[in-house]
Amino acid sequence: MTILIEQPIFDSQFDVKNVDSNETNELVLDGGFSMPKEVSQNGFATPEVNSFGHSFRDYDAESERQKGVEEFYKLQHINQTYDFVKKMREHYGKLDKAEMGIWECCELLNEVVDESDPDLDEPQIQHLLQSAEAIRKDYPNEDWLHLTALIHDLGKILLLPQFGELSQWAVVGDTFPVGCAFDEANIHHKYFKENPDIKNPAYGTKDGIYTKECGLNNVMMSWGHDDYMYLVAKENGTTLPSAGLFIIRYHSFYPLHREGAYTHLMNDEDRENLKWLHVFNKYDLYSKSKVLVDVEKVKPYYQSLIAKYFPAKLRW
Ligand SMILES: [Fe+2]
Ligand SMILES: [Fe+2]
Image 1 (cartoon, rainbow, N blue to C red):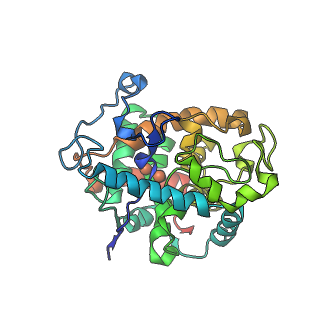
Image 2 (image 1 turned 45 degrees about the vertical axis):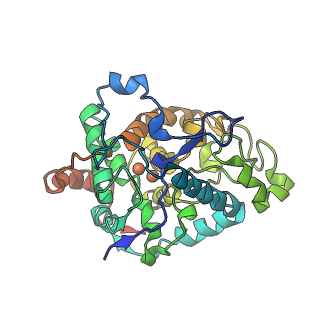
């Protein structure tokens, strides 16, 4: 069975940023940004064309897409409240939806095909393996990072009927903390004024219900595939290092890792882990291309990593 997602699936790679915070109508897609210098320095070659042989982020209907992106973030910003996140965490924290291994889940994610993604005409497993293989090439000794790349998007199974078929605003897109003021670094910040939490004075200050440097582990993030996969990995007793779990949990937290917002909530461990998230992010963004990974060829390697860091069966 293949689930076709009719609405665009927004992941961090669809992140749209204001070019100038004073010019809210001027948007540019991520791929339009020039390559960070350190990417070419550490040897990761950026593909110049996507699956269709076009430049990345080359949309015929650019303005249509921007409208879709804005509509998506409007829904997300209105609906991701503190209470909603709490409810989702409780619900999915039961881990009573399925029992399966990590590789099984990679194959299950293949049923989600994002037909609206102009950069990717390939099954999701190709995005996972392409980012994992690219990191493996540049960081051969960090096997935990290879596995982290492989599993970072598995939480998108929340879109599938057997996992609740959540709306896209509850699965993908940039993430942000709830329970404190919404930083202006959040994309399409203006839509937060329709979020009911705005009326709660306890959530209205910079720290909100948190304290300075309390650590991100104590902060409730908007609900999505990041936090879900973190929960699954943690509760099933993964032995991935803290940096791997941090990447899984915060890879869509663009307001932090790109814009530098919310850093006042970080502790020392977060600051260390953030360095690895910056490394990872380049591969997440730029590893979608026509050069397909031979799944059967690399499968034994990733299965050995899965066996090293996870139990054979996990509760989801
Ligand atoms: Fe993701
Ligand atoms: Fe990703």
